[in-house]
Image 1 (tube, rainbow, N blue to C red):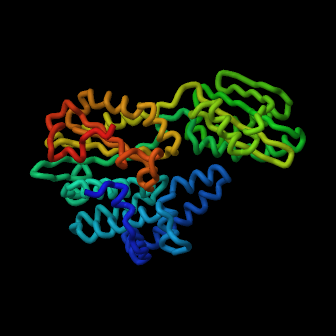
Image 2: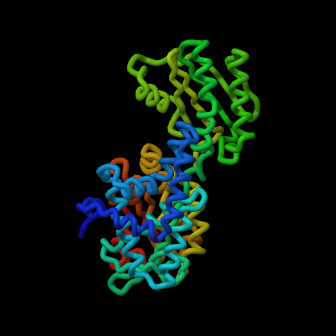
Image 3: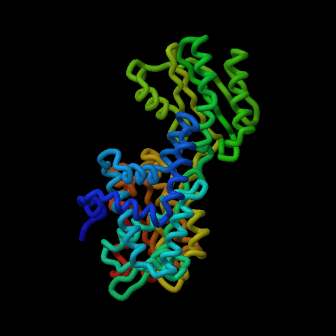
Length: 406
């Protein structure tokens, strides 16, 4: 049996007609409108714009494939394979199933939505099929609350796919932080022109910095406090909502370049800090921000599972939750695994009454979706945890989908 890495590394000929067929499922005009919107939002600022483009990496990859602007990367090849699955699925669905599939893909282009949930579902189906399961898209064909019905050796299981943003468990939301850093960039450049040197501005926000603070009034207040600190040539400012401290930035010789600088600051402030570097002809200004509490990404995932399991799974068959953790980078994803945070919270969930219909939980991210290699990616393409208390936990028919991977 092919493992997941092997099945996605098989050569495939680039066929832009297939990409056009996928776009046709959504509607060419709607797709064009979406790409213009992404391009417009990506021009918001150097940091916030880059974050926006990363969020819509699947859509941007598809557009590059459609235009054929260059040879596809390995990650784009994987996206192309999932596009082929999406088109093939459309050809197999009934009229009602196809209508639901078109609606789901179309909704993926609305607001802040992305194609990631649809591609997570496609990848989950492909992986289970390669493990020897017959896969029915029951959510599309039958309007079921779960997404996939798995069948192997006469045994069935329900699989519900879900996407949760790591931002849900963060006190410092990254996109809001990037918007703040972009907003004050010009002020810091002006400061460096008048005060050549290297500086470090440490910010502590006890309540964190969340998306709601990203509204103009919230960012304007933070921006104003920083500008006033600089204008008054003070080293510190603090109240119950914000602590600011301005110090010289002391770096060893090996840390003088940008990469060494960020690595050193990351070690000093920890993985949860948000960092930004403003470099000018006269020096460097580093921003480092932390919240008053630690991130709780794994805890947020556990709460999400407890919320959706009773609603998405019927309880008449063994159930599997396939959780996709969005908006996380390589370092954070590895940390969640290496520190056993995901394992601890998932096993806590499996011990609770809300998990009585769940035989296993899997966790993946964009790292696995795009086919990046270990150690950044989880072994076997996903983290998987079996519920030993479930009656079907030792079913040989379900074993490829439920046996714990750690």
